[in-house]
Amino acid sequence: MRVLPALLCALILAGCGGSSDGTRDMDTGTSSIASGSTRMTLGVNSYLWHASLDTLSFLPLQSADPFGGVIISEWYVPPSSPDERLKVTIYIMDRALRADGLKVVVFRQTRSGNAWQDSTPSADTAHKLEDSILTRARELRLSTLGQQG
Image 1 (cartoon, rainbow, N blue to C red):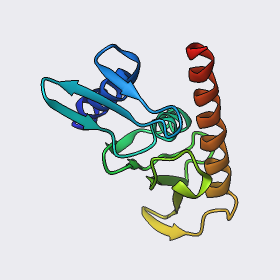
Image 2: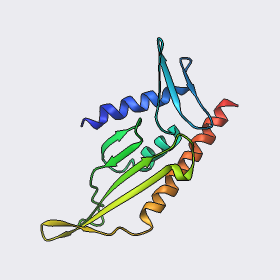
Image 3: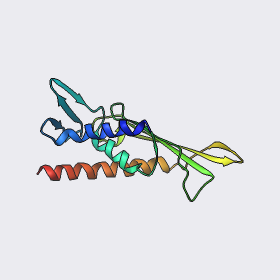
Image 4: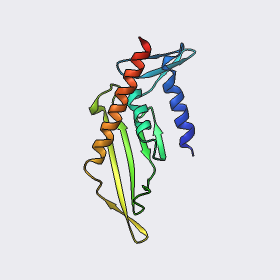
């Protein structure tokens, strides 16, 4: 449950870009907030950050670091496959909204008796998640640009 306060704080900080005391760089999606003479800037592209959280919303999160750009899920057992579980780690490595600024790693395990054994995930899984995140990030950016005009 320690993830929830950090996640809420990150979302509040990231959402401050449109207020009168913050700024948002429309090209990179970075958000910053000011408090007195101090200004904090998120370490990653906020569109990729929010799109990653949206895309993984069905997974319980183990940790989410908006300044380092790492999101780690808990193990997830799909209801249709009780003998399989997945874990996802997302790395956002750039402040720009670029495909090469995102890396998704998927871990898979299968149940063998009472123990979980590492298995190879489908080669397509990480790529499909990356595509979904990038598509959502572009949608978020376009909707933000539409609000500005």
